[in-house]
Length: 173
Image 1 (cartoon, rainbow, N blue to C red):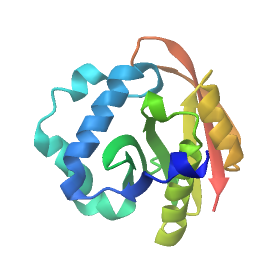
Image 2 (image 1 turned 90 degrees about the vertical axis):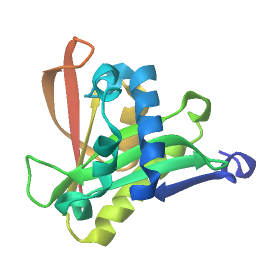
Image 3 (image 1 turned 135 degrees about the horizontal axis):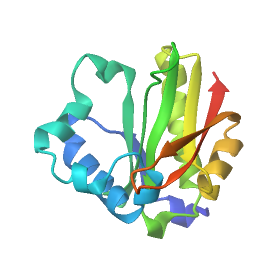
Image 4 (image 1 turned 90 degrees about the horizontal axis):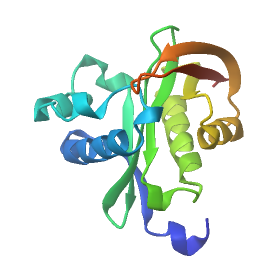
């Protein structure tokens, strides 16, 4: 990415006041790339405002972070980090999405870095997991560049009704 392409693109940790941005980009992601997410647009579009606001409140809020990627003040990407249910002192990266016009600019690497920096600064986690659907080559490239190692493969039923492999990677912090 050259300097001109990057100068009006920012990444920031989202807070309660940003819930409408989160809702907008998440619904955009689920509508335009349903094959790579574990939730469905048809279910998420029905959620009320309190559902989206809960992403930023409650006891577990200190253990997770959601980031927005902005171009000229407009949200055009998102990503998150939250506790990994299957392992203690471990987090999982998830929900990464970049709107189509902004792909191929190296922004996914910035999103991974932001979440790993947050995890390291939080001192809550010793490891981070991330996964992708088999065949998602862009995700695989970003994960490899960040230093994650393949840990296992699981066959799951994806929301689009297809049984396919989920490749799960781990990075020690």
